[in-house]
Amino acid sequence: MYGVPIGKANVLRDGDDLTLVAVSYHVQLALKAVEEVAKTGINVELIDLRSVKPLDKETILASVAKTGRVLVADVGWRSFGVAAEIEAVIGEEVFDSLKAPPMRITLPDIPAPASRTLEEAYYPTVEDFVLAVEKINTSERVYAVSKRKV
Image 1: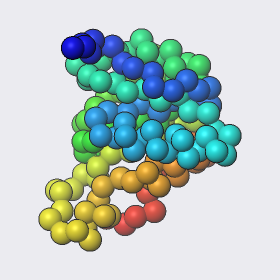
Image 2: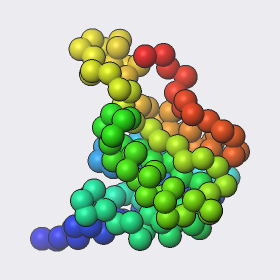
Image 3: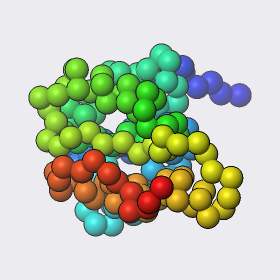
Image 4: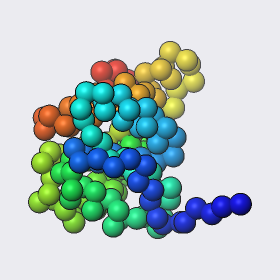
């Protein structure tokens, strides 16, 4: 038997180019994406939050201060979600450390679709994560990540 500490994030991979903070299933997608971008020389620090309340701000802020770039991946909608709160905390606490605007991967602010074709356009993929990491690592101002149209 083992326990998982509530309120303490798990740093799954150390890195110094970019911080990727992920929640829930997006941790699995992030792991695959981080392995993919590592082949191109991008060294991503991957944080699995494990819990969102309490939020392990210390781990997040220390990592963002170190890397200067952050991508937050949340399985919820874009507006008013965990990713938005994490970006707000980063903006309030370590704004001066940022080399590029924070980015997030979330579900679009629309109801979940009921057909396979629409689901493929709705849910983020490993490719979306790779694209976001590559764009933020080049310090481009990016506000839309996906090539998909919803």
